[in-house]
Image (tube, rainbow, N blue to C red; front, side):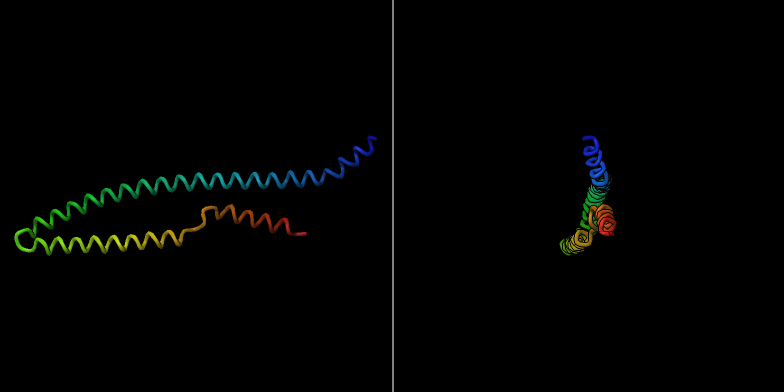
Length: 128
């Protein structure tokens, strides 16, 4: 009876080690996903904050510029000056929208490092 139990333990030994290694690799990859997700969250929050601050300051600058130009040309070319400022703002908005759209289209994959590690693991496991 003890020999049957020992032989079953020996038969399951390599399988257990293989499963243990597979679960350890999976745990490592999940930890990497968590780290990448935390880094991406921090990066996005920082970019969002700086972007909002830049937009607020740019809006204040544009309001001040509009007032300055309107006051400077109020007696002679008031509507033409305001029309030119409006056209400049519209063109700038279109350019910004196009750049934002291109940035979203060309964004890298979020979990690129994790996907590369999974591919390496797959290649290692395929080798005989």
